[in-house]
Amino acid sequence: MLKADSRQPTAILPIAIFAGSRKQRKMKIDVIALFPEIIAPALKTGILKRAHDANILAVNLYNLRDWTTDKHKSVDDYPYGGGAGMILKPEPIFAAVKALNPEETANVVYLTPQGIPLTQGFAESLSLESHLILLCGRYKGVDERVREKIVTTEVSIGDYVLSGGEIAALVLIDAIGRVLPGALGDYESAHIDSFSQELLDHPHYTRPAEFAERHVPEVLLSGHHENIEKWRYAEALKRTAKHRPDLLQRLELSEEDIAILKEAGL
Ligand code: 6GU
Image (cartoon, rainbow, N blue to C red; front, side, top):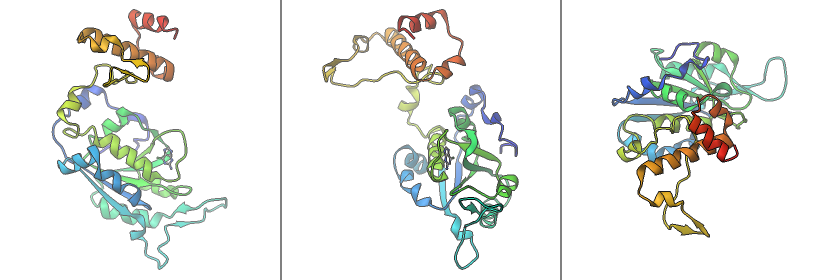
């Protein structure tokens, strides 16, 4: 499991380590949420269903309310010090995690806008774990003692605020599930461009060759694989420069790359 102070983005592994870890493993993800029913249907379709059916991924959904002990089943309470919003009480969360993680071997991930931003590398490093517990916040979040004593990793899925952690948990499950060895079909895995790790994807076309007064670029119809690869690379580079210049800054651009961008006025 990751270190207790994995709040630092140390979770991002060199790609070589990830690539060398392609052997079959099984991953268990326990989700603790107030609205687990948000997550359930997505597990029954597509790659997540396939990963489940292939015995690669087991996702168990739990309702935090099941660990309350009072007759009103209360999961939240007012903040000490005053202010708006409710706080998730520590006792049900401690009880839930104790029940699901008695040996304290799991990585307990708290989904929060204050977490480490989720990236492909972060998802891949989490995919190497065998047991994750995802804790979904609601309202103003959890009592700080949950973070101090139970949570090992905090994850955010982006700079915006969702009304709860469930959708973020689903995003994380999807990002992890699809990179588990065997989750993608051989065809899908074999058709990953060599540059797709660093750049945004290039445009794609399917039949018909002409549609809505637009023709598919000739090079894609040429059957010339080297030229097709060059075109795709150039398109990916240009799109990245346009939409995500921050990604390009991390790369060392070649003379050729610079020429491609210059020609496109980027
Ligand atoms: Cl993980 N939770 C919530 N509630 N909002 C978010 C988020 C998580 N990541 C981005 N926004």
